[in-house]
Image: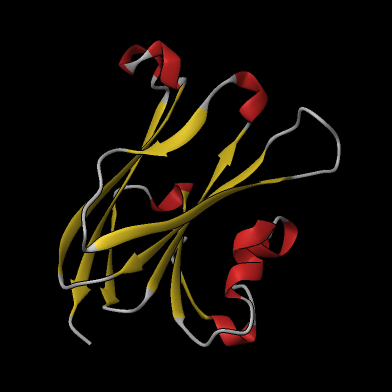
Length: 138
């Protein structure tokens, strides 16, 4: 489900309301356009303008040792922050991993995130999230 929201009006998805984490606090009250992607959007293409944000929210259960990380990086779509918000107050449960990216310059970016145990290497990858960001000048 691809959602666009103006941050001045608050988070744009139910997931954002149930597990906001510190990223929601960072963006609270700012009137910046933000595009939100979830697991269902893997493989999609999004259009952004320079200065807009991309927020990717993916389910994660850190106690299993598996964590989402970005492969590579570039200067067109810059990772601003990553945060985990537990689904409940109990220990050991899952929640949402949020990645906040800023569109810094025009270009086409292939975003790739993988769910894996970093210390076990590529053979431990259990899921890959991909998206193409077409970043346009303001």
